[in-house]
Image (tube, rainbow, N blue to C red; front, side, top):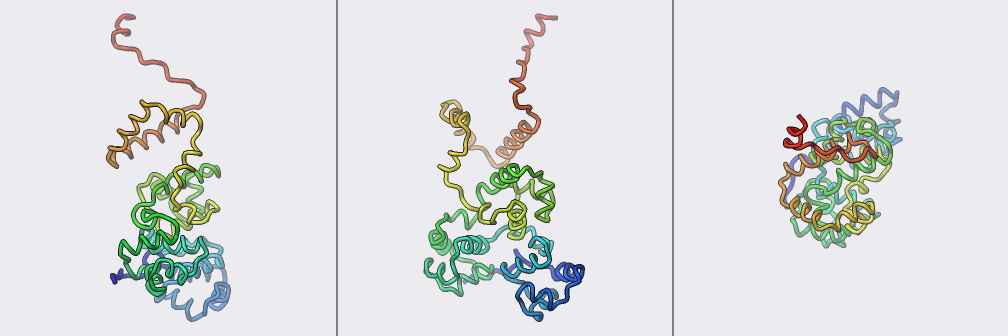
Length: 282
C-alpha cells in the first residue's frame, strides 16, 4: 500500500493564523474549543502545528471564527490540487454515506478508505474505479483534471453578478487565482474549492460534479443548437478536437476578449475593403 508523505498536505492548517484569529476575537483556547466541539488540548496541538484537523473540524473552527476555511490554510498548502482522496470524501459526504457504507460498496476496508481520504494511502486505479462506481461518478472525477470546473465556476459567478475580485474576496483568495481556475490553468486545492463554493453559496460537490451531456446541451440557446447542426460548424469543431492545449487556450482567450469588447446589438463589423477596391477609389 503506497503512502504519501506529509499526510493532509492539501488541508494543512496554519497554527499561527488560527491562534491569531482566536486572539483577535478575544476567545480563550477553551472557548474556541467548545465552539468547535473539540478538546482544548487538541486545539492547542493544532495551533502548535503538531496536528492537522479533519475537514469537519476545520469547518467548525472557521465557522466559530467567522472565517472561510481557506483563511486558516497554510500558504504552502493552498497550491496543492484537490487530491483523489479529498474528492472521494466530498462526494461521500454529499451523498450522506458513512465511511463504512462506502467501503462496503467499493469492496475495501473502512480503515483503508479512511487512509485514502486523508491522503495517507495512494489507491490503485482499480480501487478508484470501484469507488467511482460506488459514488455514481466517473474515474475522471476522482483522478486527473476536473473537467468543466472552470466553466461552471465562471457561469455561477456571472449568474450572481460577481466580479472575479468580489468572488476572490469572499473566498479568501486572489483575483488572479479565480481567473486561473476559470480558464482551467490551475486545479484548486480543497481549501480553495471550499472557499469558492462558500462564496457562491453552493456545495463544493456542485463545482466538481461531472455534468450530464444531455443537461449541458439543454442549457444551450436555440441559436447555438441550430449552429451545431450546421455541417460547416461541425467541421470546425472536428478541427478543434486536434488542437493542442496551447492552441485551445489561445482560442479561448480570443473568445473572452471578443465577448468582453463586443457590444450586443451593434451589428456586424463593416466589411474590410480589398486592396484593389481601395486603389480604385484613390
